[in-house]
Image (cartoon, rainbow, N blue to C red):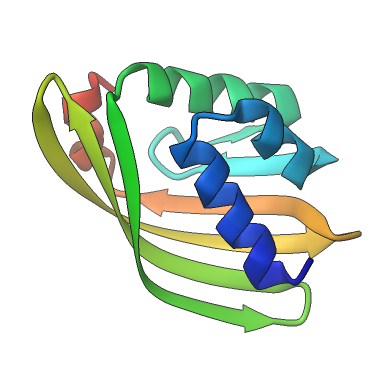
Length: 121
């Protein structure tokens, strides 16, 4: 699987709410930095955070604006469209990724924390 296919699979798994698939795309020692909380999460912690996010939404969709690749890394800018309590909310996000052994090894997610207010965060 190419790194582009790996990212497509990641976002498709999130939309499908398939956290097992997300976990399989990560290396066991993945580190996920979240810009809204300024915290780094390990494999299990990142899946818990993702579960909490999905539990607050009834629909999730990614509108990819830009994706750039370099050796063992990539950056994606997208609008994350979420539905919370029958209202749609767009959230601008930029994420950089590092890859190792055909999986995602590092994630750095940049999002304005104020845009997460509809999620109750």
